[in-house]
Amino acid sequence: KEAILLVGGKGTRLRPLTVHTPKPMVPAAGVPFLTHQLARARAAGVEHIVLATSYLAEVFEPYFGDGSSLGLSIDYVTEREPLGTGGAIRNVASRLTSGPDEPVLIFNGDILTGLDIRALVTSHAASGADVSLHLTRVEDPRAFGLVPTDGTGRVTAFLEKPQTPEEIVTDQINAGAYIFRRSVIDTIPADRPVSVERETFPGLLASGAHLQGMVDSTYWLDLGTPQAFVRGSADLVLGRAPSPAVPGRCGDRLVLPTASVAPDAKLTGGTVIGDRAVIGEGARIDGSTVLADAVVEPHAVITDSLIGAGARIGSRTVLAGAVIGDGAHVGADNELRDGVRVWCGATLPDASVRFSSDQ
Ligand code: GDD
Ligand code: MG
Image 1 (tube, protein in one colour):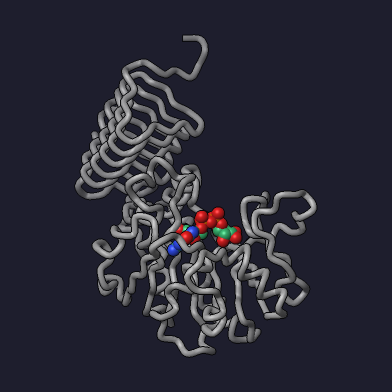
Image 2: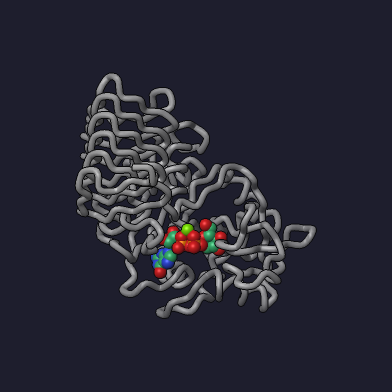
């Protein structure tokens, strides 16, 4: 079995963490997020993976090599210009070894899910569909591809990120995992940008192709925003999200072996402390990710936040739902909340930002 992973997006919603690192390489539960997807694909019997890269393409191969450490054979294909999701799929066709009627798995590179990949393969074979799609239900589907189906699960429309209320016809969304009959991939136009969601799926439906949805309500999260990314990383540590690649945890936190944590620091809620990071005495960190070489000074209080590589958080500073870029320095006695982003390398002086008005 073989699979294509789409990992070429710019990860704009995750900035500044994606300024130097493509989204799939940002660490979740101690390893680049992509590792979890690769390990899950391998566990489902996938042996050959083609990574469709574009943005910061050069960092993938040095890390994963030929894939043998994960029991995989990995090929890398880089787009000269971003080709979009459909164009990226078409662009790797020459690397596929499957025959025209064989199934090819395709995954968005930012999805954390407990999807039973084997069940999707089985359902694909049983329905004889041209394309099978993993669907999930969400409360607010507007940021996703809406996929209504008939009583048999056959897809009746594909509405990517609907703009008008009339288009919100279902809470079933495209969960970012497909199986294409190999020959369908060859029908996507080559050498120009194509969106699989806006062009290929609607086009296939218009031409009468059989698209089959499989609703699966297991754990599912798109890690495209900082809030979702910290949540997903914590859920991996807490065992709520399944992955064979979590490097071992202790209770409800994960401290990488080269990190140094003061004995009275309190780490909870799936917090991850990266390589060589230093956590000072009395610090309290909940549901957060601290990347490699970051320093958290004594008595800082951090919740639901992402601290970039080599960043420094000053004493008694409070972070709640904040994103701190690589190498940034937040001085002591600051208070940053609710989606605040500090850019890579920026410096905030001591006691310069306060949230409450009574100071
Ligand atoms: N190689 C390559 N080239 N990959 C790309 C490109 C490109 O030009 N553009 C995007 N990708 C990759 C991204 O890296 C990501 O892994 C995947 O394609 C999807 O792109 P996102 O930017 O994350 O899309 P989205 O989250 O807004 O929407 C997509 O995912 C939703 C589920 O999370 C769509 O597929 C929606 O229909 C779906 O509901
Ligand atoms: Mg996404």
